[in-house]
Length: 184
Image (tube, rainbow, N blue to C red; front, side, top):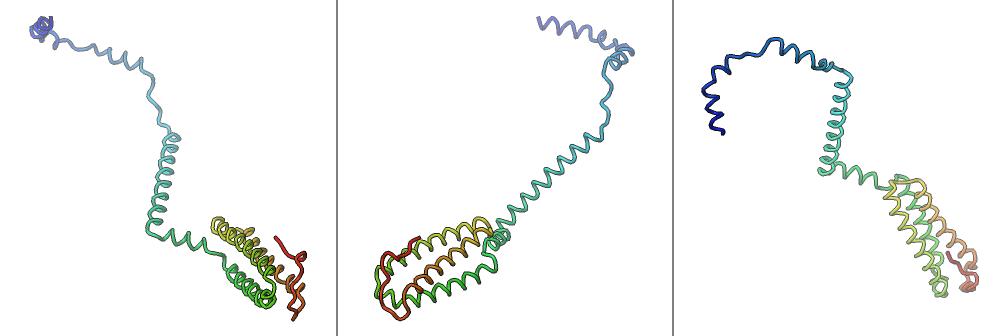
């Protein structure tokens, strides 16, 4: 069947080529088509703004990743994670005071092992709280509440030591009674 159709087309080819479409045909097609799409600046500008925003964001992320891998951002983050300027001096002061008070208590502690054990337990507890606060300080990038808690921790240590020194008579080698002991 296909061969017969091909044969017919070959034989009547000239008849097909002779026919040209009516010039009014295209006018009819154009009249049925909707009007052309108007040029809208608002749409063009919106799309351009979105493209610019996406490009800017990807460029910024790329720069951050590049800087981080080169180490400059790592150094910035590490320097921010360090303690605030005044905190190191404050810690040095309170550590010095605590050590001084501990030296004053040392002669009495030699005669009172129970008191020394209890004091060491309290100081160990306060040291563990201090360690947790230091971790919080690194995570919260020097949050003021954490700094105040660290200072309060040092003050509590000093208060415990001062109370012990006040309760123990200077120069006496007597132990204070167990009921006067301190606990956190």
